[in-house]
Image (cartoon, rainbow, N blue to C red):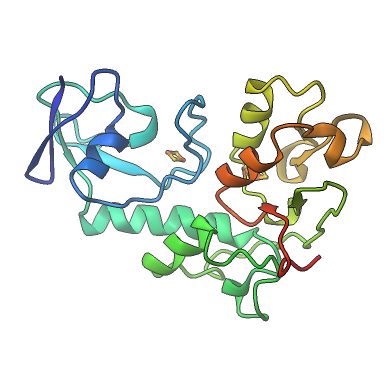
Length: 220
Ligand code: SF4
Ligand code: FES
C-alpha cells in the first residue's frame, strides 16, 4: 500500500490510486473538475495540480500515480494560485448566463451542484481576469430527464466517456475544432436519442450546469 506524505500529513492509499486520492485522504478538497472515477483522465482542467517535492515538477494529481515514499505539496500559496488561474481560464469562456459573471443570476438552477462555481468561490477566482468571449447559454430541452446547455460546458469529456461505457448507440461527441469545439450529438440527432440510458449518470458526473437533471425549478 503506497504511503504518501502530503504537506507533512502521512497517508496510505490503495495500490493503483492516484495522487488525488492521497490529497483527499489528507483532508484537502482540491478542485478536480475533469476527473471521474472509472474514466480515463484527460487533464483538460489542470485545476488539481500538486508539486512533487523530489523533482519540483507540477503535475495533475488526477493523472499521477501515487508511489510509496512520495512527498508532495498541495496547499502552498503558489499551488493555490495556479489552481485559481485554471479556474479563471475556464470561467473566462463560460456561459454568459453564469451567475458568477455578475450579469444576473445563474439560469441553470444548479448553483448548489456546480463544482466550477463551488471551487471558483472557494479560490476567489475572478471570472473577468482573462479577456475572452463567453459562450451564449443555449439550453436544449429535448431529453425527458435532463437539460443540456453546451454553453456551460468546460469540455471535460466525462459525458462522452460515460455514454460510451454504458454502450449508448449514439452517445455524445466533440464537434468543431479549437475555440469552436463543443459537445454535441452526432448527426444532429436529439439529446434523447444520444442518451437513451445514460442521461442521469452523465448529469451526475458533469462538473457544471451543462448537463442537469430535469426538475421543477430548472429553467429552460
Ligand atoms: S457537458 Fe458536462 S460532462 Fe460533458 S464535457 Fe461538458 S462539462 Fe464535461
Ligand atoms: S481533474 Fe485533474 S486535470 Fe482536471
